[in-house]
Image 1: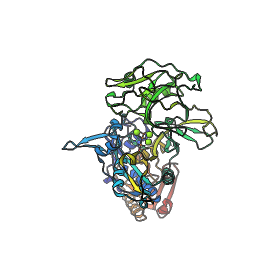
Image 2: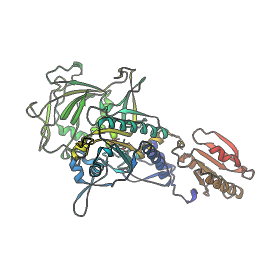
Image 3: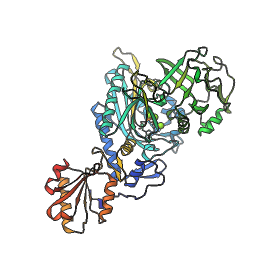
Image 4: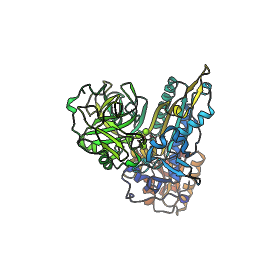
Length: 562
Ligand code: ATP
Ligand code: MG
Ligand code: MG
Ligand code: MG
C-alpha cells in the first residue's frame, strides 16, 4: 500500500485518557480511534492486524472441525427469558425496543440464539457432535470500560458452541478446543497460561481461562512455581467445606467480627444498583476479610449443590487486594439481577467465622434475624480462602506464586444448563429423547490484539511479531524528491508486491525524521530505507525488534525477507 493514499493519523503525544501502553500506542500509531467510551473504530492498518488475529483463530477452529457461521447481533428477548438470563444478565446487557415495543438484546453472547437454532434443526444423535463458531462484534455495557481495547463496550469476539450426545463426547470437544486455543495464542506470540477458572460459583474444573501474563491484567493468577497448576484467584484455589453449621470450622484463627452494616451500605459502597437486584455481593469485614454472597449451582469438592444461596469468607493476601477486589466488583461475581421472589439472600452460617444473616424484602436488603431451615434452606457451607504466595500448591508440587493476567480466552463446559431450559433434545440410538450437552468457547479477538501490544513494544512504538504485523516490510524513501531514490523505491515496491510480500510504502513527501519516527511507532518487522546509495542500488534494512541493520543490494531483498 502507498502510505500517501492511506488514513494513518499518527500522534506525537499520548491521548490523555490512555493509561496503558496498548491503548496509547494503538491510538498514537493510527490503528484505532475512540468514538464513545469503550467504542472504537479500526482504521485501515488496525483492520489489518485485527484480521491477522481473526484468521489465526479461524484456521485453528477449522482445524478441529468447527464451522464458521454468523448469527444476528439483535437477539429477541423471548429467548433470553427462556433461560432466565433476561433478568440475571443484568445491566451489562444492552437492550433496545423496536417500533412495536418488542424487546431485543444487542448480542453480548449467543448461547440462547444457537440453542434455539440447534433445537429446531438437529434431531438425531447422528448429527452430533456439532461445533460452530462466529467472529462478530459483541456488546456489553461494562461498568468500567477502560484500557482501550482491553475492556470495550463493543468488541470483537470469536464465540464457539458445541453440542454433544454425552459428557464423554463433550470432554473430547473441550480437549480439542483447549489445544486449539493454545495454538492460537502461541501463534500470536503471546506469553500465556491456561488457568482453572471461576465457573460463576465455586467449582471450576470444567472451565479454563487463557491468561496473557501482564502487569496491566485485571485478573490475578495463582500458579505453582514448579508444576502446571494455575488458577484464577477468583475461584479461590483452597475451598474448605463444612457439612452443617453444627460442625466446627477447622480454622479458628480465621474468625472475624462483622460490622453491623446493611446490605444497602455495601451496595452503595460498591456502586451497585439495588433496584436492579444482585446476584452476588461483597462485604468488607476488615482490611483482609471479605464476605461474598452468591446464588447459583455450586460444586465444592465434588459435592453438587443446586441453586443455593451461599456465603463465604474470603481472606485476601493484603489490604490492597481487598480494596482492589471491592473496587472491581470482584470480576465475574459482579452485580446481576436476583428474581423478585427472593426473600433471604444469604445466611452466614459458618458460625464462628461470621454470625450474621442478611435478607431482602421489597424495601431492599438488610440484616435481620432469620432462621436457617425455616426462612431458607442451608445445604452447604463453604469457607473460601485464598492462597497466599509461598503456600504449598494444591497439587502438592512447588509453592504458589502470583502473577497478573489478561483473560483472552475462556472455555466452558456448559452441560445441560441451556439445553434443559430451552428444551434442546435429540433422539439417541435407542430412539429415546435426550437433552443435548453443550460447551461454549470465547476468544476476545480485539482484546488479544491489545494484549499482544502489551507484550510487544518498546519506548519508540510497537514491535509486532511477524504473524500479526500489518505488513512484513515498511519501505521508505528518505527523499522522494530525488529522482534516483523515488525510482529505486518504486521498483522495490513492485518487486515486493510481485513476490507476494505485504509492504507498506512510505512515499509521502515528509522529512526523513518524521518517516522514521512513524515507522518505529507502527512496528512493522523490517524497514527498508532507500537513501543516499540509491544510485548504486543499495538499501539499508533494519529489524524493528532488535535494531540490527545491514546494507543490501536491491537483488537480495526478496530472499532476505522470505
Ligand atoms: P472479563 O472477566 O474480562 O469481564 P468475561 O469473563 O466477562 O471477561 P467471557 O464472557 O468469558 O468474558 O467472554 C469471552 C472472551 O471475550 C473473554 O475471555 C475476553 O477475552 C473477551 N471479552 C469479554 N469482555 C470483553 C470486553 N469488555 N472487551 C473486550 N474483550 C472482552
Ligand atoms: Mg472473566
Ligand atoms: Mg465480563
Ligand atoms: Mg470469561
